[in-house]
Image (tube, rainbow, N blue to C red; front, top):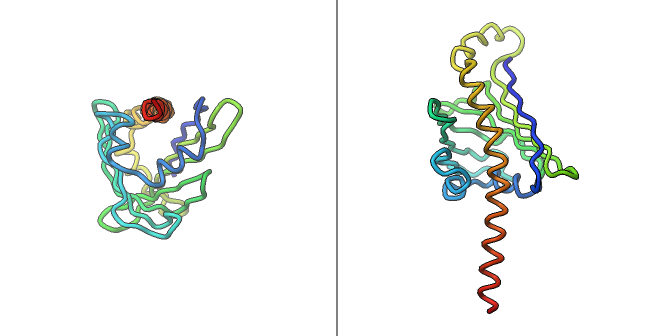
Length: 173
């Protein structure tokens, strides 16, 4: 199994904001988060009330050389600490999982973004084929993307908070 983990502390952020944003995505908000890099992120099929079973479409660039487009199913929705998505192709669930773990700290959010690809046990012999796709260049692009995007999300929330405050102040004048 291939495991790619990025761990960050994102200051001035709260796990509830991040969780709610990621579990109930919209293309508009996704585009505003990182224009030009984030293209689409929306639910195509609703699951249970807590989003378990939602099928989500995601389309984004990882820098100039990589584009990721895929469907995922929400296989774990533990509000507000963890979301796990499983990638799908042609309606078939793949041995590919994206896990987002969030924990509040005194400094902000402790965020872990983990990508797990591949098999365990006997099917592990297929992992070298996965490495042909998830090569060192793609791993580096994903790591660089993660190290930028989560800080941008905190900035996006702060900008929206300021805008709402300005609108509220203008309305009360």
